[in-house]
Image 1 (spheres, rainbow, N blue to C red):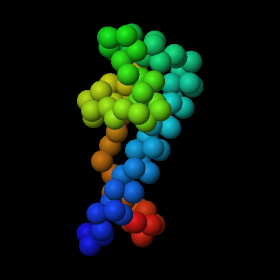
Image 2 (cartoon, helix red, strand yellow):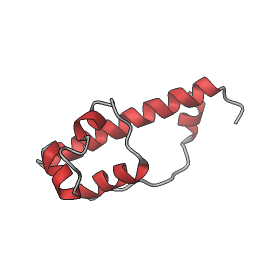
Image 3 (spheres, rainbow, N blue to C red):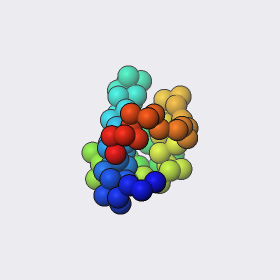
Length: 88
């Protein structure tokens, strides 16, 4: 827990980027457009999906969980592996 603030921020940024990349991969694998995902969820217009996928907008956790649910996925809280902790 004695890590510096910058190390936590860098870790969070890296993991966020990985989550967004994975969600784009899942959407593409499902052969869905950004607009289709927004429509399924009842979001207005495109639901900011393009902004989220280009990391220009950070969705709230509830919105991100809804997006993942379209692809049959969710998030879990898991303990970091020792290697990940050491990388910080």
